[in-house]
Amino acid sequence: VNGSLALSRALGDFEYKQNQNLTVEEQAVTALPEIKEFTIEQGDEFFILACDGIWDVLSSQECVDFVRERLKAGEQKLSKVCEELCDRCLAPDTRGSGLGCDNMSVIICVLKNKKSAV
Image (cartoon, rainbow, N blue to C red; front, top):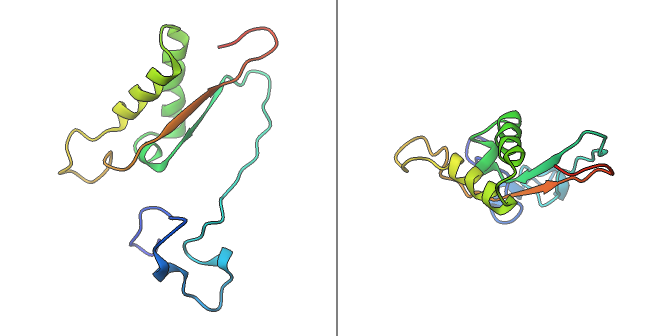
């Protein structure tokens, strides 16, 4: 946001909420969530809900590939896959670009179809 914030925060950062010509929802930083709606279709296996600490490091496809590989192996609990995903995204140290130093949280939801589950 304006070259200062790496993400839009819902609370705080009031300097980005002072434009008198804009509604609350139109301010540079807002608590209004961005929501996308998708229809679950045949063949969908799982979805990943994660914060920017994950998406800054891995693309959507890289994240899907990472999770799919571990789910197909069938040996790990979802909590372990989440843990490994966060570990994969962590920076080796904090002296770099800041990439991999952000907060990280992730939820993986496996979708079951009528015939079988992933």
